[in-house]
Amino acid sequence: MRIAVVGLGYVGLPLACSFAEKKIKVVGIDSSPRKIRALLRGRSYVEDIKSRTVSKVVSGGWLEPTTSYGKISKCECVIVCVPTPLRKSQDPDISYILSSSREIAKYLKKGTTVILESTTYPGTTAEVVAPILEKRGKSGGKSVYKAGRDFYLAFSPERIDPGNPVWHLENTPKVIGGINKKSLEKAVFYYGKIIDKVVPASSLEAAETVKLLENTFRAVNIAMINEMAQIADRLGLDIWEIVRLAATKPYGFMPFYPGPGLGGHCIPIDPLYLSWKMKSLNFYTRFIDLASQINNTMPNFAVSKLVRILNGRKVPVKGSKLLIIGIAYKKDVSDTRESPAVSILLQLAEMGAGIMWFDDLVGEEKLPGKRIRKLTKKVLGSCDAAVIAADHSHLDYEFIVCNSKIVYDLRNATKGIKSKKIYKI
Ligand SMILES: NC(=O)c1ccc[n+]([C@@H]2O[C@H](COP(=O)([O-])OP(=O)(O)OC[C@H]3O[C@@H](n4cnc5c(N)ncnc54)[C@H](O)[C@@H]3O)[C@@H](O)[C@H]2O)c1
Image (cartoon, rainbow, N blue to C red; front, side, top):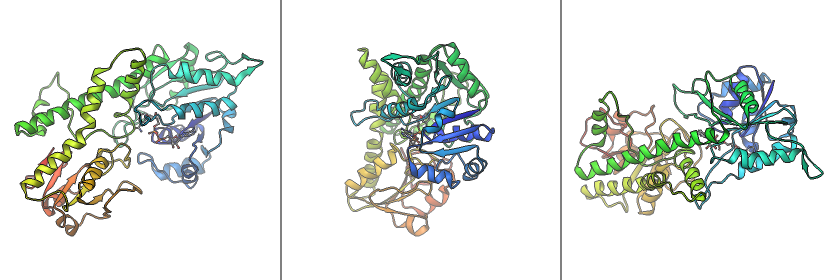
């Protein structure tokens, strides 16, 4: 058996490695020559995958990284994990799905199963991907390839939670929808090789919508607690205490935690795929739109509260020295896409603050201010405030509090530490 994984990022690389570790041959296709070179050298660029895993599967011949789509003709199954970002206008950008589908179509052979994993709006697989793949067999104007008959087509949302030490690809149940029964059976068969539990859906569209429900659920609940954080701030209460106490209720409450805003490639973006789709059906998704509005303004709330805190200490933002700790979008990841920490950093720099920033997980970043490689007593002591924007587990928060003038903690990283220097969102 040979499987192709198209798009070797946060989703595709763990998937490709999982098949390869089960001794299933994988052709890993990515348009980035830099990523392919790294993999060929046995280096991982995704924190959940160790370089030694990449090295083992590549040198063992189980994972073949390449920029070329040619080997698709030798694969029984092709799984697509390309990005689905938003355009500047906040509309879905499915251009990567289109370009990868066109490349796959060139080499598609009869009997192949194609599975889309990229998060997208309901209808994409049947209405956009299927017609592109069916063109493969066009002869004399007649389509000789039919999805579900000549090749099989499925959608399966990826639920990976980067940095989660408990739930990973293999033990997280996987929902799968097919364009027909045979396509579903085929996709269930391939995922069954690596996933403990697969959950069949009745259609492609149901499977596509599952992912959007899951991430809309998170976006809406995070927005609700972010609004509660602003309410608690006005009431002079500690939102973290309120959530902790509410969470002692054994039923009917699920804790969500406030923060400086949403980041990453999923939760800020996916619900907007659904709202865009629904607008085309003349339906307005009020929960999604309100949640985006609240979550998008959280960096502004975080900055305005910091201005208040500094003001209380007679420190004007202009000319102040501020240290941002953690610029990734959440704890324990290196990903800075849509990171609220970056938005906060840019706002403070624009207001004339002297910025230093520290994040030993992230790679090269072009940001204003000075990058700090080590959190020393001298660095912490030299700043008017340290802002904890991502609460990476390996950092010593006692040390940070001890050696800073003020700590503005946007993540409750200093939980359990008692000090008058700590301010929270
Ligand atoms: N990152 C997550 O936590 C996560 C979780 C669940 C679902 N998803 C979804 O999975 C999809 C992929 O996300 P990701 O985070 O892995 O993105 P990513 O940017 O980390 O990886 C995508 C990869 O696809 C490659 N690529 C782009 N166009 C290509 C093409 N035409 N052919 C071959 N390769 C191409 C890129 O070079 C990149 O390496 C998105 O739809 C995302 O919404 C992501």
